[in-house]
Each structure stands twice: as structure tokens, then as C-alpha cells.
Image 1 (tube, rainbow, N blue to C red):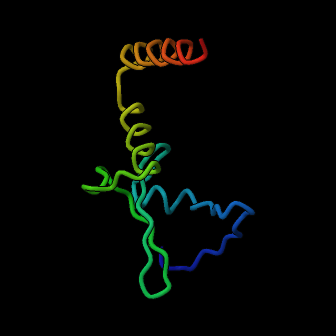
Image 2: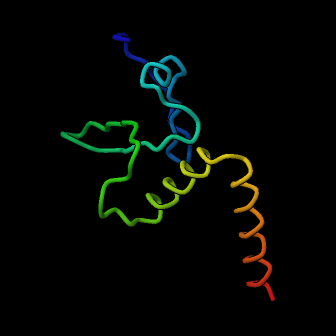
Length: 92
């Protein structure tokens, strides 16, 4: 894919990566991406593991979402039940 692609950024700073580019980069829904900046250019790359030492809320959330997506349905349902119980206890 050598031809430039132009997209508009929305009010929240989001830009849609075209499907052909996502497919070429083997990116799919729920994948973790790392954003970087070098010489005024923003880079986006798919990662499989969060870099060691990154404990930011965004990194942790990305990791949890990716892990949840790769779990078997039975384990997902078990975790949903446990989380629901924790929320109910918190409300009480």
C-alpha cells in the first residue's frame, strides 16, 4: 500500500484506519496498538504484550480487554459473574 490515504480526525482525535491497512498489518478489533512519535510523525503498531513497566490505566485496560477477548466463553461468563458480584457489594 504505497498510495497515501487521507482521513479526517473527529472531535475526540480519532482517525479510522482503512480496512485494507488493518488487514495488511493484521490488526483486528480488540488488538492492542502502541502509538509513538518520532520527528513529528505519529506511528501506530500492533503489539502482543504491553511493554514492561507500563502501568498506565490505558495500558492495563488494553491488556485486560485483549486477554478477555482471547478467553474461552465459559471463563468470560465466570469473570462476568464475579465482576457483577463485586459491583453489587460496592453498591451496598
